[in-house]
Image (cartoon, rainbow, N blue to C red):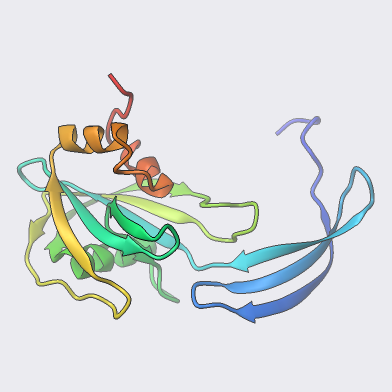
Amino acid sequence: MSASDPLPWRKLKSEPGPELMVARARFDTLQNPRTDEALRRLVLETPDWVNVVAFTPGRKLVFVRQYRFGRGHVTTEIPGGVVDPGEDPLEAAQRELQEETGFTSQRWSPLGAVEPNPAFQTNLCHHFLAEDAVQTHGLKLDAGEDIRVALLSEDEVLRGLREKAIRHCLVISALSRVLDLRFR
């Protein structure tokens, strides 16, 4: 941080908004330190998320294909989901990998966390690496999920990125921590 960084905005008040399925809305009124103007802003109180880059012993990557309501089409992503209240992010990553793919691993490494959209969301997305993942269970899907598991080589993943078949920014962020994603 430097002396030329923007100043924090002073919160004047906070009002609860509607309870949404994936977040709780809040409306904060904040004072712009540059203009002194009070502005009302939407904040989504969102639970933390996890994403898992999982490699099989044969160095295939474990991906999921599922319909996404926001974009209205099937996407290709790595396993991931919501951290439940009181749950450790690593435990959530292990649970999500098993539920969505049936794979488990004994070798886990944290890859750090990113802010999905700090403009209006409060959460982090924690990235994890699972090595030597093997399929030990059947899928255990929520009512809102219809998932197909895909095992992809690194070349297939890079091709999917180039051809825009893999576009989820949090997936790309996690992959970038273990793969060289530069287009060659």
